Length: 340
Image 1 (cartoon, helix red, strand yellow):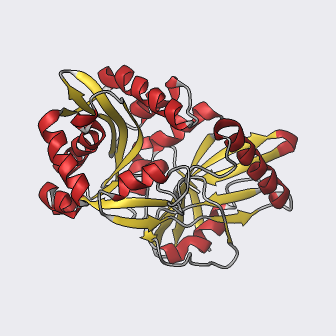
Image 2 (tube, one colour):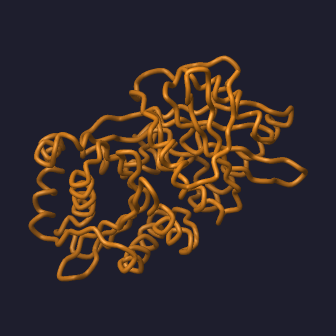
Image 3 (cartoon, helix red, strand yellow):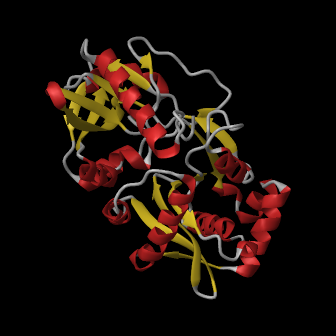
């Protein structure tokens, strides 16, 4: 039988989850501290079998009216092998109480492969984006440029000539947030309060990980900026925005090039463009897809599962889905999810 151990030291936790081949920045200690701002309570649980560590999960717990409680492992658990997920999930159930436990290990499966099934686990709609594009940073900048679509490659060369690129810290946050808000207004996207993104920048600078702002400027003016986190050999593009001024500068491309260069310089292996639509054509996010797929790379899928812990699981799931649909209608006038 698997043994469950709670970890309470940030460095020990990050060392543990970064050592596993299937892992994510959202399983790092810092992400749990960020999510406290949204009412979640993190618990960090390691699962050991006879031969050692099987997996580990930062489980976020959130109370709901009526004594209900959500339990959710964002892009987790971290695992040695995906095949161990049922055993790890069963062990985690001993340490959390809720209606159900949502799991979405960052396996990065080929997008065209069917979702694997596991006994005792039900397929679930993921909370984080189900699909993304991964670039292989180990091949270097020139090979990455060659792997881009022709128009992207041309725009990348223009961005390198027409913008000043750099990786910056907290001093650039006001410029980032201004561009981020401007972009979200144009796209009719929801966002957290400013303090949330400041917390991401602060808390994700942690043992075995970092957070940074990549900025593309023209004459000193920030035209595009993104908030990135890095953990366990991977750089994640979480949030970004751009101005419509100086479109000839190709600043959004420059912002990504700045982050890619930083990742290569730090020896990271993967650049995650973070979130592309399940069905690109005709979706609210078709423009996002067209921009991101021009980088090349491989399209990957993150499966999600639920371990039911209470008979109230199905009614709660239905209520949560209805609430999400209502929010979509209110914000964008469309019931579909942005990346649906």
